[in-house]
Image (cartoon, rainbow, N blue to C red; front, side, top):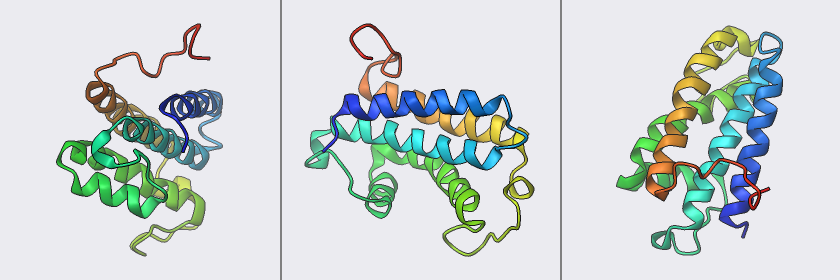
Length: 149
C-alpha cells in the first residue's frame, strides 16, 4: 500500500497541476475539478494511512472510501466536502453524476469556472485540507521541504 508520504507527494503534484491549469481556468474547468478531486482523494488516503482504526490504513476503491467517510463520525466533515468534489469530477469526466441526476453537454454549463475556483477549490478542497491537517495534528503536512521532496 502507498505510504502517507506517497499520498502527500501525489497531493502536492496535483496542486501543481491545479495551479498550472488555473491560469487557463476558462478553458479547463472540468480538468481542474477532476484534479481537485484526486488531490482530495490523496489527502484522505494520507490520513487513512496513519489511522490504526482503519485496519491496513488504506481503501481500495471509491465505494469503500466513500462508505468509510460517510459512516465514520470523525470523517463526516471530510465527507461533506469530499462528496461535491467527487460529484463534480464525475460530471467533468462522464458528463453525468453517479445518481443520474445530472446530465450535461458541457461541464462549464454545469459548473462555471468561477464556481470551480470559489466553491470547489476555495471552499471544499480547502476544508478537506484544514480538517485533515487538524486530524493529523500537522498544519504543514502538505508543505514541501528538504526532507519531503
